[in-house]
Image 1: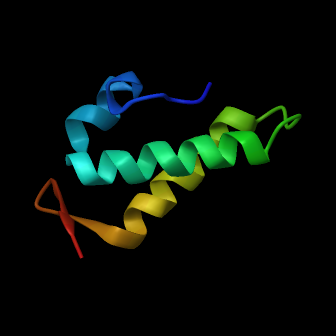
Image 2 (image 1 turned 60 degrees about the vertical axis):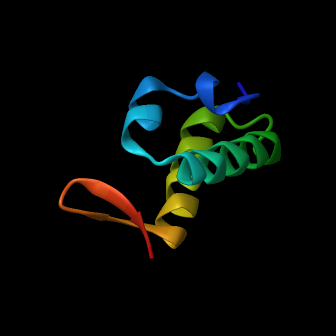
Length: 68
């Protein structure tokens, strides 16, 4: 299911990522979710793609996600 706002994201994503990274995650997830219509693993693929998008701009250092 696509996410309309960052507050709709899974709690784990909201607590782990800064706001800008949440924006990246949400936009990537929504795009990937639409792109994988009909795939039985649609949601799983969308989450993997969203995390990959975040990791292009952020890195986890000492437990905190920081901008590259």
